Length: 133
Image (cartoon, rainbow, N blue to C red):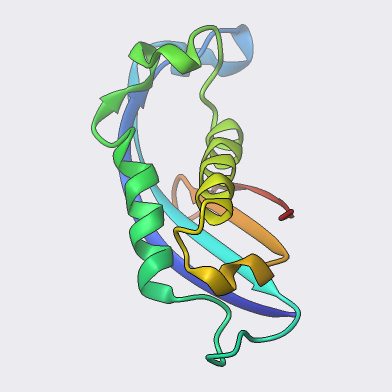
């Protein structure tokens, strides 16, 4: 299995509901480093997993939707704890749609899996991964 990874970051504010989160129930900020890993069993006709420039631009487009925003004010997240795990899946889902729409180029249809890793710090991170249709 071949893998290509592109990296970016974004900054948000949010708060959580529930005793589990202790002081994080109050509004706080986070800067996430995001790794987008794209996988396929064979290289495409150009000898790559995917166009890195297109993958980077796609990730930036998705992250720009939330960059410098308070996620508590984002309508689609109403009633949800925007945990690192939750955001990893949300990014995964948005990238998957863009792959299906052809934003990563015609050969991206050969991608078989993807993993999104959000790093909260050098000691804590969460990921979501799964197959692509």
